[in-house]
Length: 141
Image (cartoon, rainbow, N blue to C red; front, side, top):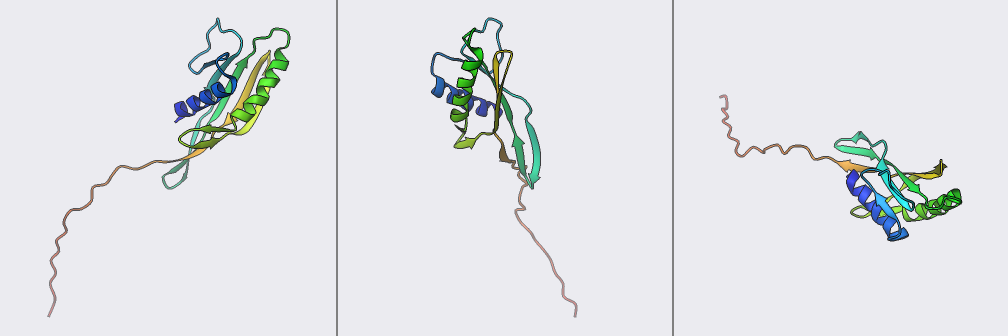
């Protein structure tokens, strides 16, 4: 599920920003240039909700590395506004809403946080049904 959400985030970013931007999911390389996004899941939690329903909280951090050396903050804030719009809803087998969006610029790098929380129903093991039942009764008197 997490990989599916990360792919959907990547598709949404690519649709908004286009081919001039690189998007990484696996790891950050040392020779990475500007106009680059890095997507990671920070703290996924799974909590039993009711019966076999589980509530999953998935917090993602999307880092943006700007190209500009002089106007890094300005570029980061422009990208932040566009990210809020394009990541409000992503397509994961239907629309999934992003919540708790926030962003901050630290050392010239934009850190954008968004949650994609959902309920998951876990099916239990199939218990074989009884095929035949036979009973014998006796009546007194």
